[in-house]
Image 1 (cartoon, helix red, strand yellow):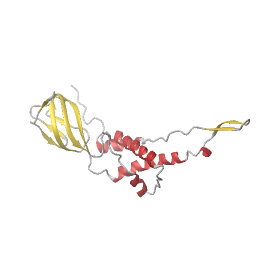
Image 2: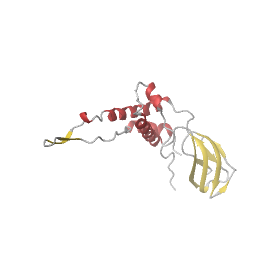
Image 3: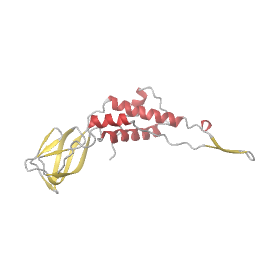
Image 4: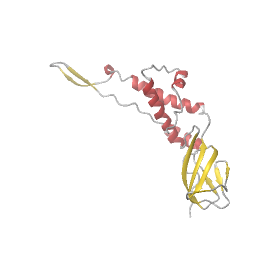
Length: 187
């Protein structure tokens, strides 16, 4: 099941961006795309969700779960066998017997409410894309071909609106939400 966007059309309207009924379908696509960009940079869903993931146990007593903050764990299995001799501490599963093999975990993680600065970031990305979309008026595009006999004009194709986060924005999201390796261990 896909995650809900990190911002809604109502959030755009609240920031002064007018969205007509005809534009709502494309704006919803842009909201999904912008949300995916932010989630990718953050390395986490940001908004609260329940996930099942398989992690490789390395024998240590602690197993860090991705997608902070972790609020609850509903099931843990090691190599397909359910285990209950663990505790959850600050997003880490602790087990006296250690974690070996493939560890499958079902857990709830992410923030219960999307922070306002994240909503604003998504809205800014969408607003820029919407401006590009709106400038797609054929009269504002360059003429790429013109024929005089039986008059014909071909306008340059409209490129899809592009969205991207700057390197600084990506780094800030990664630092804030813990994307990337938390610990590098050598053997």
